[in-house]
Image (cartoon, rainbow, N blue to C red; front, side):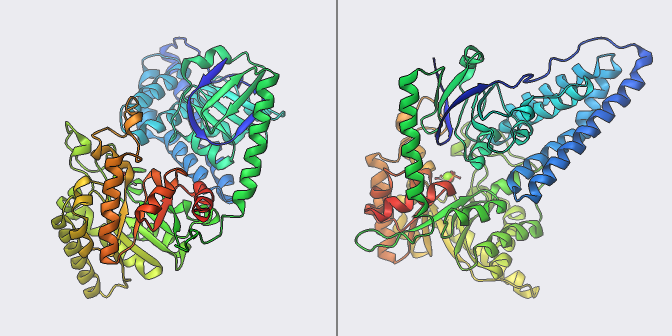
Length: 538
Ligand code: PEP
Ligand code: MG
């Protein structure tokens, strides 16, 4: 039996299957009496506090052992366990004589459904809320939750979903891989698998139900499928794949810290795309020669209110310091499209990707844009920062953004604040920007091509639409022509041109991009060694 899903974390594994005993607890449904309301409210409160305490403890352990990103996930879990709105919704149900075990699960489901209807980032948090509610409910029932902590034999874990609290409880080296029915590449099970360096296939759907009795599983996280109870031939095939991967990884190790040049001696800088300051150290270890794209909107999206200028300054300075002399490109807010911003009133749009996003929104909201530019200018005193504007469609927008930057610089200087110099760049991700590249180049210090959006706008194919895979491809003559035009304009103006869309990390695209004149590639950090190897072999 073959399960097909999303290739969430690369690698292959064959091993015994393990299905967590309880998955999610079945709530004990019973009615309580009016007299029991008060004691049950107290019981719920205590269980929520105990779960929050345990989660905070696990988060702290992860932080101390240097796992910042995972620790951040637990912070969110603690917030959920302590959330006053969630608590009062549960209390209301208990007041209506529902059992606390069932009440907390029902409220968790309601919250999760609300999150799932939001953007991709929030939807990925829905499982976290279910997980926390499940833990409180399990505690009320006096049950352990997943049974994963008792696992001793190295195994492939099969589950409907796996929450960070599940994966964190598995002893080191015991999980050989994950297969889940739910999830996307941005769900936490995928993030965790990638950071644990084990293969994962997520989103296999209802087919998983038929595999829960499996004894053995062969898992290919690079291709996105798993074979249940594989025969000898399949196992032999997987062993071959595994040997080839181990060999490839050993070879790639040697490339982590090389400065990649093509056979003709063209130096290509290979940098990392970051979503938060906490990813900086990891990126450096993978061999990042800089940051080609810091997506600042994630800093704004991980919370309900807007980060202050000082908070942004801290985050940008942290990355600048970590990278020292290496260049770090901070992209100003790219909100809109599929990314909403909590704390900002955004009217719903018929075509969000063709709507009020990126620089359009920033120029219209100086109260957001100003503090961000000020934070970048101040952080530039601590390293080699560059600023980049997203979704630019004409020279006028670039001029307006530069004027705003100049204004902020003037303010900071008159306030006597320390600032650093920043180079100014434009993302080339609208066909208009590519076509007007010569004009934009005169006003810019660098270009970075955002192939993810450039492809969707050029081919009129929504980048997230599951039926348009054929068109979600930078290797299309129209897209390549626009990249070429951009590179020619950059070359003529003597400015560097990078690519920070997903195409930059794809081995088959790298030679084409370099041939067209691209001088820098920026990608998810684990792809860096392979990209350097591809460049070196050109
Ligand atoms: C792009 O569009 O290629 C890009 C890198 O930006 P984002 O994926 O954040 O839209
Ligand atoms: Mg983009």
